[in-house]
Image 1 (spheres, one colour):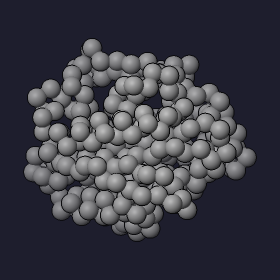
Image 2 (cartoon, rainbow, N blue to C red; image 1 turned 90 degrees about the vertical axis):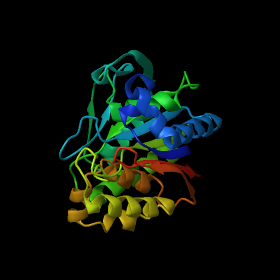
Image 3 (cartoon, helix red, strand yellow; image 1 turned 180 degrees about the horizontal axis):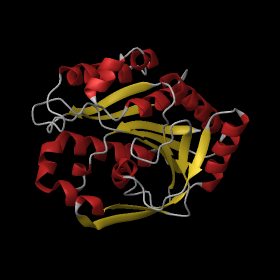
Image 4 (cartoon, rainbow, N blue to C red; image 1 turned 120 degrees about the horizontal axis):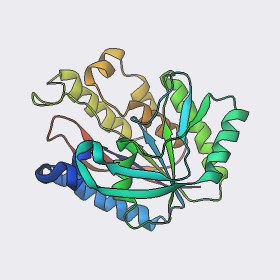
Length: 262
């Protein structure tokens, strides 16, 4: 069963050893993540499924990273001290793989010991008091948007049949061009995109994501669209209430934290 769902940012600047003095500018986000961690702990998850935009991707297949254990670290960002080891939920992975095969969903397995930062950043915050929780790291594909929604609905079937308590986290950042000092400079599409995403998230409105133009998506340069499509598919036809815990963009990149109350 699905016991928890959330949307989180994944900027490495949230990690104290990386962000350092910049952490002070992310106060709303860090407070929201701390609240989310408490909510996740209270939901008693057996496994956390994280959908990331920085894991290994395949053009024509969705994928899952299966390894005997996973390492979270931020050495690539200059933090040599922060690390954590987590383990996979092999049983749930097997169930996902078998179900996708039966449903003719293009799906493959990869194997990497080190988790990408899109997976690692939210898990750094969310697993602080969940030392025994298992992990399932998922990645999207190069397939059309509607195929991502379908993948989500197929995952929902697997999760709802499972006896495990499953938490789902869509990890990504919104537009990367919200101000002149943003990584890609300022573009008007950035603000429009973020507004539309927040509105779509509030009601899990899949149509709000699918109706976005190619020009808007390319102009906004976000890295959360596909993760949201999958998450919305997982939540399709479920009665939920969404709580926006924070949204800010101190560095010109949109950071959204939201909890889906099931």
